[in-house]
Amino acid sequence: QVQLVESGGGLVQPGGSLRLSCAASGSILSINTMAWYRQAPGKQRELVASITTGGSTNYADSVKGRCTVSRDNAKKTVYMQLSSLKPEDTAVYFCNVHWKLFVAEFDYWGQGTQVTVSS
Image 1 (cartoon, helix red, strand yellow):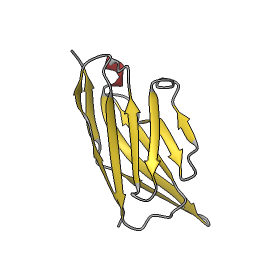
Image 2: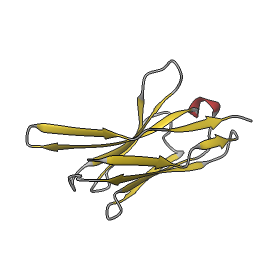
Image 3: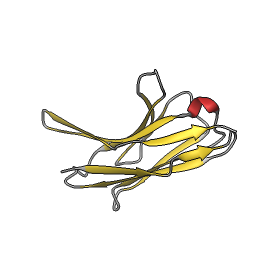
Image 4: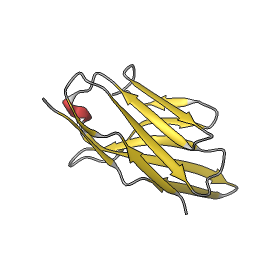
């Protein structure tokens, strides 16, 4: 069983920053992509940032320049630092791990952590 546990959410003032962490456990292929998604009320879940085992990153346009995703492969943990927070960053943030093995694809999600940006 694969489990992802997020931490670091909460209430943050506009202009502030936060760091989310996601620790994975279980049988995970060493070559994978870990990512952060978010879902705001009434909106679809969207990709915020992703990082491969080799360190290649991808960011949504809405967070470029104020978001840094990183990972510790030995700890199976992914981090996301998000700064200059805006009210529109308010959402539930989900951690995801994805990998392919031959023709099969594997996708696992965390339970989500609420981030609220408000004064």
